[in-house]
Length: 305
Image (cartoon, rainbow, N blue to C red):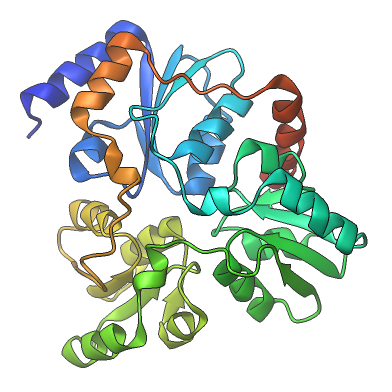
């Protein structure tokens, strides 16, 4: 049942002709009032198809809202909290990519969508954790500059043996997914031997190798819904479990680590969402030249996807 603040937000959405997009790592109360919830790829696809709304409240982190702004130059894109930044996205700058491109001039540049717009502008194509293997396979080049998440790069290289994957930078990572370790998984496997262990490709290689499945958050949702199994150990940010439990009440979901919380995602609250609808603050804008170059890489990814 929705609380009074959630009901207010729903009414404000109608009044402002607004929609709310939320990432799977948002808290349950925000998930409940969102018009669409998804992983990075799903949100990117959704953002590319916004037609009727004038205002988009993006409950995610900075690079996601930038992508929505690039794809919707005539709409107002706002972040409920302007400080909701993705630390990984700030680990690779446009200037650093230019250095890598000079060092490896024969390489295609594949950047994780978890990058800022200025970095996207230097990419040949983007990818997400859901489509990274498909994107790299679609390229003719044998050498790939891949960043900024080194673990996702390892996942891709483990799937595609005939291409050289060069991490840019070498140690790019998600601080939440670096929290998962084998000791926790050993314990949970012993406690729940019947469970599928699902982990995100941003986890360390040894965690990926031990898991039953390595999936994006969207992939985890699909697997849990379609699987005959009833118990799942989930190795990603805690609030994906919130969504999984709500959508699959007959199944059991155990977080691999309850402390795996993205503090940056959690900066958004219902109060801030309401304020975004009322005052339309924290508007996300991308300079036109950067937006134009970035859109080329985004569009190419969407075509392959």
